Length: 363
Image 1 (tube, one colour):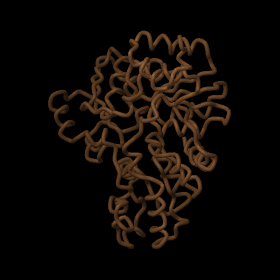
Image 2 (cartoon, helix red, strand yellow):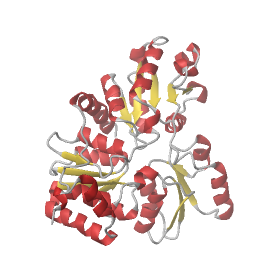
Image 3 (cartoon, helix red, strand yellow):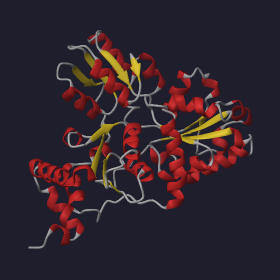
Image 4 (cartoon, helix red, strand yellow):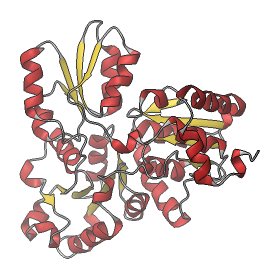
């Protein structure tokens, strides 16, 4: 019989799709036992429970990036999240470490809303109006590796929802204004947190010349917000919060800063997925908590705290996070680095690491 490693790649993948969850879990656990500290499985909070439970380290994009950077003993990192996260792990990992991603098709629509061409064009158009050396580029973690490299080359930085406010402070020590991409809502909510007036946070429409803004708007801006959004978090509405307030007035509502500002304004708290985790784990028994973020975060936290009632504000699923399954994990591990390797050229890794290391320093 032909071994799995000798079969054509797609034939082998189909084989795993026919296996039961129990069989797939056993394969993954066998790899974990055999490899020990040489294998590190990272799982984002949005992973489905059966994937989440197999991760060695779970966290938000900041925490997982930190784990990848500090993974000294492991030889292989299997990143269960979307592709930009695995790219960041590749940038931060040692050259001799292998970074694997169970499904290379698991992308991010918001990350696709800003690319190197449109951001470079925006940078050139800004330089026509203002001193570009006083503009600090900030890319959200939810972006492709070449945009992280773009920021690294221009004195910029990567941010996550965990440290965005501190990143703003870091930027204003070095410049007068921020070009923030690709999520306008995180950029705006962070600006609100730092007391920046809304008129000084105009939206840069990347489809328009100079973002559709006048020279005065650009020169007066403290933050230029890229026109982009996360469909998971713009799904949440004021009406959903009002309905919870009416039916369950004692419930606690926590939302993510990728939500629209009017939703954030009505919530009891706003923060990263790790902020939500800490709030839920610290809640008194019997508390009901609603989370305005990807639904699997609520499901995983409910499993951690069965003495609470943890619900999602509305059913909002990230289909790309959902693509990561046990079959993908087992297949990728069995193939021993032959498939689903995350590779980046050195000209991306070097400046990308600069931007990510700055992010990690702004704790």
